[in-house]
Image: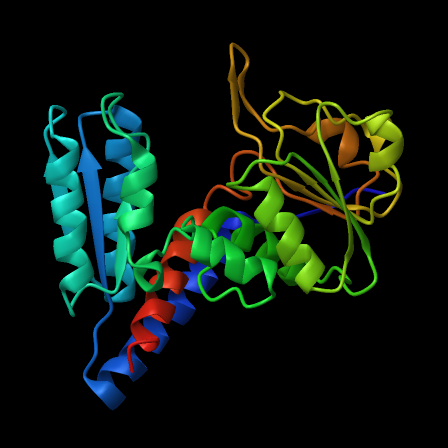
Length: 282
């Protein structure tokens, strides 16, 4: 068999279109336009690209966009003051402080200072806790994007055995909890797991989020598996995921490519979270 390629670019575009339509309805019924504030400290080129992409996405879906670019030498107190000001603003429904911060800044108090109901990145402990109890109001964007791709690939989730490779707070743990909320039976595996290939071969749904270039081979999966590859590994040969795409696609039912799979979903889910945050103020 040859797998269906799950097109993250198309799904992302569909979600942004859905958000744009919802924004029009929100404006017509309540006179409310969602607002997203993005804070960038320093001149990291990758971060600048991400922030510009988010700004374009806001324009596409009809959000108000507020961008704050602070110099690298910004003090912790100054950044915390800006977050407090954004928390208080009624026209700002989502706040995102772009990571990584310059080394002299501690990201933890910044994250904790963001109003959980404006934490559209979904990293505040309260929002992670909401995921734990099955009330994911503002789930982390990349894990939520993974779930959306699984659903839109028409995979049967209820009762499926989902294996997640990776246990990070940003992807592995949240995506495992979201899969559990979809009534999957979930196994979390990682670099210390004994006989990892054998565990992976049990998966009906496999999410690879470990950060190792093409680690998951064709003989690690069973026929008919749905594979979500979160990995983004830059090598001399190019950009690759955590899954050996060419091998695994011959056995999978459906699989995400790298690039063009999970990557485009993150900003789409950020737009959805910002819309939800605005709706929560009504």
